[in-house]
Image 1: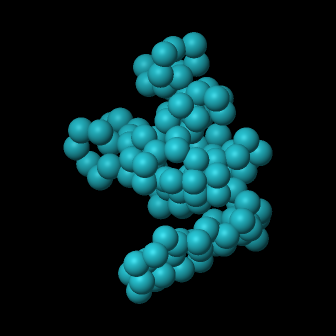
Image 2: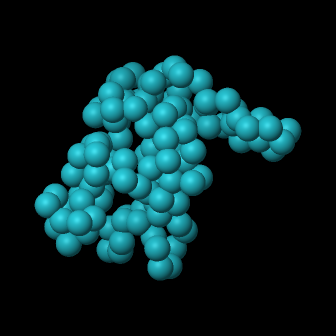
Image 3: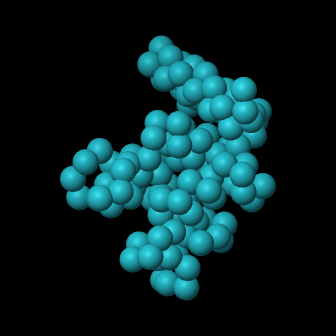
Length: 125
């Protein structure tokens, strides 16, 4: 199993656990530190391939998502539901869906990686 698949499997277990925990009780879910989601290895490739494109959030524009500092303008570290980037990418259909059509929405695995990375503090790692 590749590292990416191991990370996806671990993140899936974490997210499933969080769903069970949050539906069973009302306190804030605990996001484990491990496996640590890496901005450089896990999150940035997703953003580069799907968001930092010509006509969208390309480098050297006001809405650039080309690097960590650009991305952090849209992140509330430790709180994915309040992060503008996360709110934009989880929109289901219609106006506000990111990435914009004709591009495909991010996969569940990509959404989970970004969610856990934000909840782990959106570190520049």
